[in-house]
Length: 419
Ligand code: EPU
Image (cartoon, rainbow, N blue to C red; front, side, top):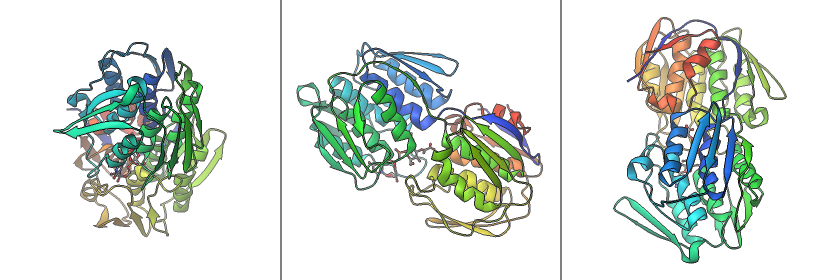
């Protein structure tokens, strides 16, 4: 098992080009199943979750080759509709293959996905929506067997009780080749939904309203291959900005999605950092001790403050002057990283949905275990600002979402090695 060894206390300084988005790449890879032909995806991040998605594509008969940050997927032949339990357990996003397989072949057999580290993550909304689209779903003994009548789903009006990202993606993936029109009310508005729709439109799909809460999909018989560039990763961006802020450093982030990061940037700015943006660049300078954020930081669906950036911003705020309060509204169990931060000297009290962070003057290095993807990144951010050596184990969590995190941090002058 690999570890990250971080010798903290150095200010991060330099320029970094942002990786492609994990949460766009995964549904887009699934969406390539709908295209009869080759899809070329540029800016595809090299991540273990992306390789898990490639293994699922291989298992159903598609070819998926990587060259640098370009993935070429050929789904002209789909020879299998069963995805094994072990592949489904590798990541939560495996569930997105359900809608894509249904849209592509009209049937599939999957199992409950993995990725439970943020608390219970049911898929009831996914299943209810697909049933409304005429999909017969038998759910028992851990397997979920789905079949459409006459080979394709039918359009429907669907109102989600919560704007779930995954449910919105599954409905879109099933709807693009369904018979008739599908309307999704209270759809998720995350930028990665727009990226998925952008890809599908490039393949010939008829979708409108993405980025708003009412999405309309008109079913098409067939989609074709395309060449597409995956958007930058706004959460990796938030992570490297938080690391720089935590170490009172200076960074130019290039290849960034500035507008999509605004909900995060507007909160980070309240800590006293100077932030300037231009085209696809974000400049941040944090010369002195950060200030606490006065208003409660409430995680909300986009365009609210992103839950995925809660842990990394917290890592920067633990040494800020004053008290900051987070309110986690998306996941029930997304404060598991706080014990490790406390071990490094942070003063954090978790009370239900709230986490109260009383700023301390400094942290000290410690041996900690990554609890989940973003929690692990938060530990790395805290370790970079701490005095002395930290050791982070179980970094397979971090590798799910950050492309060579140690190389990115070293490029900014951080003292970090992987052993
Ligand atoms: N939910 C249900 N029933 C459902 C679906 C969701 O109760 O059928 C609940 C979940 O349990 C959760 C909330 O709704 O409490 C939000 O879940 P959502 O479906 O929106 O999240 P997701 O699709 O599972 C994606 C990202 C997450 C990100 C969330 C919220 C991907 C691959 N994952 O998950 O990313 O936190 O949206 O923005 O896109 C990460 O990158 O670290 C990560 C966890």
